[in-house]
Structures are given as C-alpha cells and as structure tokens.
Amino acid sequence: MDRRNFLVSSAAALGAASSAFASPNDTVRIACIGIGGRGPSHLNGYSKLPNVEIAAICDIDDSHIAKGLSILDKLGKPKPQTYKDIRKLLEDKTIDAISISSPNHWHTLMTIWACQAGKDVYVEKPCSHNIFEARQIVAAARKYNRMVQQGSQIRSSVAIQEAVQHMRDGLIGDVYMARGLCFKWRDTIGHALPEPVPAGVDYDLWTGPSPMHQFTQNRFHYKWHWFWDTGNGDLGNQGIHEMDVARWGLGVKYPVKVSAIGGHFMFDDDQETPNTLNCAFEFNDGGKRKMLEFEVRHWMSNHEATVGDPTYQGNAAASPRRSSDSIGNIFYGSKGYITMDSYSSYQTWLGKQQEPGPKNNKGGDHFANFIDAVKSRKREDLHAEIEEGAASTVLVHLANISYKVGRTVHFDANTMTCTGDPEANKLLTRAYRKPFVVPEKV
Image (tube, rainbow, N blue to C red; front, side):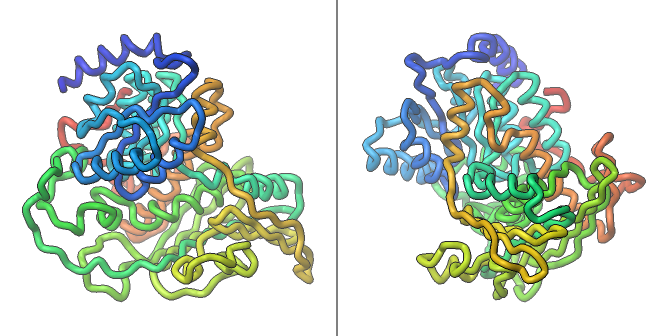
C-alpha cells in the first residue's frame, strides 16, 4: 500500500470514528492481530465479553489463521474476516479497535497505523522495541485521541490494586525500594540452520521493520524473543510485567541512573539476549530517592520472600512447572514489606517481627477494562494507559542499553537521552527496513 495514500484515507476516516463506534448497537467490533503465543488468549478473552464481536483476525502464517478460526468455531462465534496484511485490515471502517499480539518489533508501528486509521488499540507488552518508539506510540495516541492500552494485565488485578493502595496509605511506611523477580525456567534453544520459509508464511511481512535474516526456526515463532532485532530478552518478555508493577508501586516514572550486568550462561546456542541479568535503577522524583532492583534468572532458583511459593500465594493447585518459577515483586518500607505474585495475589509482613498483615488473591479482566474505556472514551478508565505502559517499557530498554554498553547510564527524562553517552544514545532507536518505518512525525 502507498504510505501517503494510507495516511490521507486514514485521516479522513478519523473524524467519524473518534467519538463513536463504527458498528451499531454499542457493539465493539475488534480485530485480533497475531494468533500465535498470546493470540488465543485474546480470542478467548474478547469472546467472553458482551457486545464485543471479533470481526477479523490477522496473521502472516496461514496455520495461525486456521488455528484462530478453529478456536472461534469451537466457541460458537461467527467466522471473522481473515487477513495476512494489517494494512488491508485497517481499511475496514467498520472495525472499531484492534488487539495486537505480534512480535515486539511490530508493536509500535501497528499501533501508530491503527491510531491513524481511527482505531483504538490494545497492544501487548512491551509496547515498543526501543525508547524512540516508546515516545512515538504515546504521541500517536494523543494526536489521534485514541484509547490505547498496554497488555500489562496485572494492572487490572483487584488484589494488586489493593496492595498498591495499601502502600499509598502508608501500611508499610516509607516505601524506598522495590525488587522485581523474573526467575523462569528457560531451556536452551540450541542451534538452527537456515531453511526455506514454511509454506503459507509471509516472511517479509513477519520481518517488517527489522533487518532481514535468513529464515531459521530459532528466529521465528516465540524464539524471536531471544534476538535483539525482534525481541528484548526475558526482561522485555515476562519481566516487563513485574517491571511495570515495581514502578507503579514505587510511584515513580523515569530513573536518573541505570546499571545492568549479566550474560548468556550455561548454554551454547543461538540466543543473543542475556538469560541472567541484574539491574539497578535509581529514581529522584520530586527530590526523593528511591531504588528499584530487578533480576532475571533462566534456570533453577529459589522462591524469594514467598514470591512463587504456592503455600503463601494461594496457588496450591499450581502445576510443578509453574511452581518452579518465582515471578513477582517485593516492596520494602520503613514499617514492613509487601510481596506480590504474578498470579494476582499479595501478602504483607509488618514490623520488626514480620507479623503477617493484610493479604488478598483476586484477579481482574484487562480485556474488559479496555472495552469499557473504548465505550466510555475516558482515558483515565484504562488501567494500563499507553503513557504508563511506555514509561515502564523505557526502563526495560535502559537496562538493556546499560548491559550492551557495559556501564552505568545516566538518563535525562527531559530530553529522553543518556547524558554524555553517544554510544548509549545510538541504541535509543534503530535503522528501519523500508517501507516499515516508524515515523518521526506521527
């Protein structure tokens, strides 16, 4: 599609779509993009909601499209339109919103295109592949006045909302530090030789904004997470969930200093991103210093401060695979500490004797929250509005930048650059493969 014609036609449609649904009877017509790893969760999530119609699905892989159609058929839902190219899908003025679960390197560009086409957007985490994109995705949401939600579903957990409110109310006193944990069993991906692109796959579209590589299975479905051109390592995969909660709980936005060390340990394979990483962030919001620690581990590990321990977190029925992971957050204050598990539960420990305090285990529906905001047209109704999602994503990118350059980076939130560090600043963005270019002016 000609890019200029696409933008012109999208802008023309924007006025009609900015405050009302394209579809009648308050039904939100949504299109799901990417039917791989997270895609089925999107299909199942929206299928449960009243007055929501999955009008289209889109994937570059015919086998994924077939999987999506099968899921919807088993759920008794009408057969949606199918697309391989999101640009064709966005021409449909009857679609109100899109829900993106593509690989990371596509998240921002798809969101910008959708905003320009007058669609609201639910975009999986991390919302951007780099810091430049984090700025552009927010700019697009603001310019086109769209409801844009990052897929940080813990934000919709009733229990975690309650735990954050406890901290705001002073339950554990002066909260000075958060510790995020991403201890998740990740086996080696081994080595994979180049091979022909599988039948039914549009590999040019899959590659999109990133550099073109010879096709290998290790660079394709899901394993793309472990390559810098398409993913952000486990810090930007599972870790972004906990990073977002850590920043939210601390009540901070951007750090002034970031340091990360680690590496790819144990395995001889194709993976580029680190599988073990220790990160430290220093904040000085309003002149008050706070600390955020974050740790990624890929293999055998202990539970920590009850995080991941089913005995404390209400997950007694968790599978052995799940209970071997420790994924969550710990917040330290002057009067105690709070642990939060990725299963939407929390526990408090108060005083010098660490007496058990309030606790809860109750999730929420992040997809429903998005649909509610699409209907209300109130940005504040979104639990993970894109500016919040982008701020947390910036922390992921800064840690990865520190790891790559091998030193502490100092961050200036006013300019969104690393102070006095040209090498680090080169990593704020990337060279885009035409025509899949994230624009400097949205």
